[in-house]
View 1 (tube, rainbow, N blue to C red):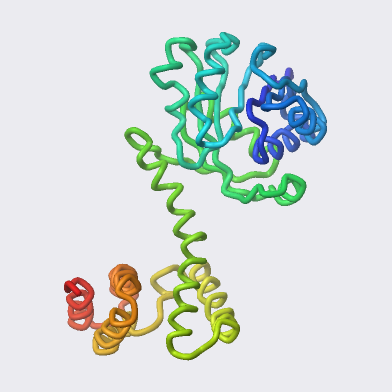
View 2: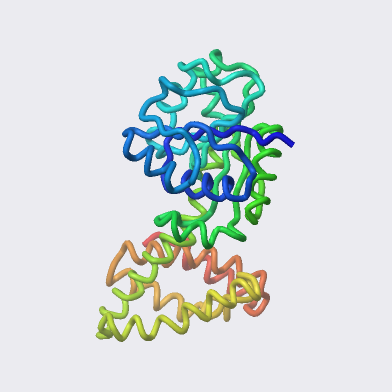
Length: 301
């Protein structure tokens, strides 16, 4: 069976990793690899082990599939420059790997009239690609989110499964709004978890516990909580005063946090409301006490 030809425009860490894995799994034939300089294009080709290095789109050849691997801030410009080449034909697949931008930007008003009949998709691997050398070793079981034209998505899912990735579908929503919320989900879970630990460390400091000791205190309870979330679910993993329905502790605690740092108090209230919903699902706290807690959390400071 003839392999599809893949060209990469903007071969960053994600594209390098995918190119390497697909090439070595004999999934695709790597054609052109386009970067901003001849040296970086050569380096990418050397890493992948295949491809024709280019430093501009002017020499781009005909291919079956085009991966646009540049950064989000350059994505639309790169799409339009690719459209201007006239190389992309009806029946080709064009996709990007952005977690925040929808597949629909590929057929934006500026580019759509130049390549009617092209199938577009977004494929977002939920993984850190800071080191392609490490990423190729640990890609197996990486979750990859897809949205876009069915014809394109079906092809790309087979490619991902061939390198042991796990596929799931995303609903990008009107104008790609849900795609932004999808990307925010990972930000909240990972980036904001780090920020939340920092806020906790500052709260410990306010009560006389230094940073080193706070880190030692937090490590077992944070790791234990994370384990419980994924083994028991969020509702059953919830502990503490809101899980118990202890509205008196919540009242005094919120007042103390507000007096110390009003912004921290707002975070306490926001997360407390979500915790109250989880507590209701858990069923340990009484309905009466949860009603009191919600009233406390909804009151203006």
